[in-house]
Length: 127
Image (tube, rainbow, N blue to C red; front, side, top):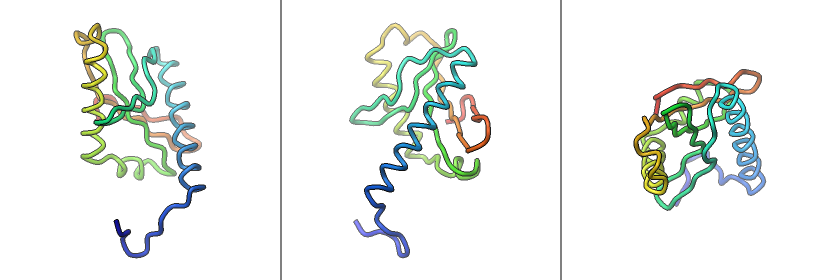
């Protein structure tokens, strides 16, 4: 597949650095969720049809959470696409099929934006 004009293929090192930043952002998001009373049920849940960064429970609510880390909040928001929503939704369905005991819980799709030097922004029901 050809890249758009002016775009270069990311180097292996660049991809590994981006992956490391993403994992660090997820750790920060997990810490902020735990401080708010959430219990983490899964991290980086991957299936053939999609993935979810964090699955957490608080009371009777199961939150399927997408984490985005960018230099600015606006860039985090821009990174959420229709494909992102579909990927998380499909993976959530698979997770619920595998964990029947949670099917009666309220289900919610959240976002957490991680911007360097700021507390993570947790948007409830935003996905």
